[in-house]
Image (cartoon, rainbow, N blue to C red; front, side):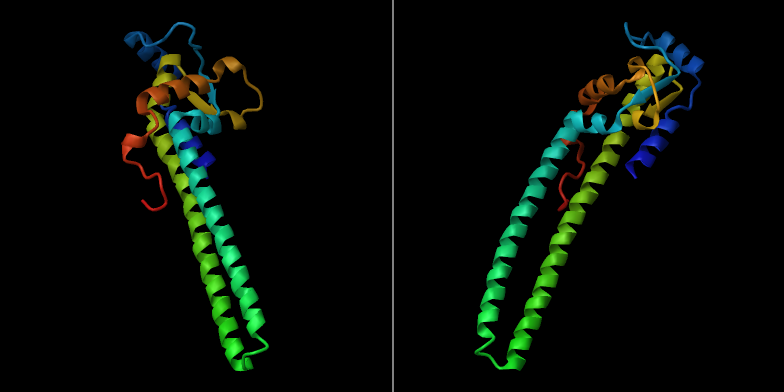
Length: 196
């Protein structure tokens, strides 16, 4: 899903011809020394996100929430195991109809808890995807600037390129520029928790 979104963003950035990009960069004096001039650039999208300040903040948040869910799952599992043991012990002393009522209620409780925990895990996955989409939207202008400065007409996800020179990979440059532009994104008002 993210790859298709990235491709759409990156293709959308390639609206100007290489000559137009080069001319714009030359007019503004934006080309920096040692910056490659190429019609095609590559970028590692996963690294762009994970090594950026924004991606690291979101990654830490997701890991903390994932760990909290795992701890909660273990606690629930322990409680349910104890409840099931207690119910099994009561089986010999309860009328069959009463035991069946308690067993059915226990099964319903287990199903409800499983659905709750699954919903939390799905919300975390949704947050991860949404955070990446929002990051790419914030990164798009920065990537567009780099394309203009280098005269590039296309920016490709490195995973979809069979072979390329390292000189056209702008991932490190993009991370530095994006960090300078948006930092960790904490002040951007973007959601960073499933509860938001």
